[in-house]
Image (cartoon, rainbow, N blue to C red; front, side, top):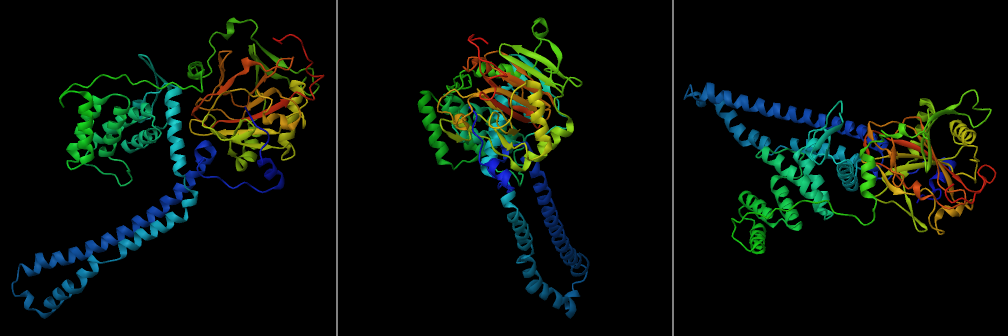
Length: 543
């Protein structure tokens, strides 16, 4: 499922940074963090605009107060005041010149044009429409995988709702609430994809919030109650809830009485109902649509929802903890803490495999080189929705920390990790709802691009957690039915192939969506060739 090394590595060696790609900003949290600086600059421009507008309004108030004072104190109290040529002149001058300058002033236009000019200078650094779509999809993915309550999300709470049980799976120290327009935009993304399951759930909340603020208009809002009702009514129609579509359309028609399209829709819906306009709507149960490409969805999501919890592992005597040196002289005095997570397939978690400073340095090196992660599709490489992240490939000569890491992996596993018997270190940063749906690390097709290195299949995976997360992001082994939480500085190791060279189906695994946090991992894939004496062949298909 993974790929040969991308052209990015060549850029790294030559010293030329890749150009940042907009439209995939949402696929990497570290890139999104960079947008904070962008908005901070925009706030400075907006502050300048506001100050200019305040000066303009203050000047208008000054003119108003001056003219008003004349009317209150001079013109009303003394009918002969206007006989004073000075009063007469200033009145005529104000009406002929001053009021024209007030009404036709270009100052407001100049102020807004200055703001627009500053905005346009920064436009290239702003997220694209694709980023908004990707971010909305990420929230919907989290909603589905973790069974999150939308009402909870709107309040900034992460509440898991399974059946009648509702529990909090994460409590943020600072909450971020969603507005009516926020919900509308998410619902519209689903609507445009003809995903009416999600459009109904999000547009329902948008309509509720818009109703609560009816008559209040926010400058930044793109949606409105009318638009939300329009999209929601059609969404209900598309899922077969025609009665509800009638009710919502009638409410919309009250707000927009001259809308002939809505009138025609109501007539069409009523005809479909085969009853009067007062008929009770038919109850329709909103169901999440099935997907054909992910047959293991239920198991995958169930494992993700456990957030890596393994409450029964202590009952298996074959699963234990130990200090591991692999008889390497480099590790005898400083062995690594090993936790056996599973025996079938063999999966071990090595705690504190790297230090905080090493993890930080690796992230610093990789960050400028991150590009949208791709997957193998036949012999091609392409970005896919089932893998949302950015990655970079680091050669061991880029920085001493990479070379030391390779040596440590070799000492611990006893495997040959030098080129071409292992791939360069791949560093991955996940985005909003960043995930990688169930896949194999080893090639499952003889036409896979993995074989272009001519060093065999991927015999083993060594995955290092460079960061921790607040919630989510577990590594789920689907057929083996367990998941491993993100443990900062730890490393996860497993064999992808049996000793007879066949792929181990039990290693089907997934990176669960990151619920909250900035997840970084580093992957070291070790190839078959070069390991002949380190891991000898075996005839037993289970080994």
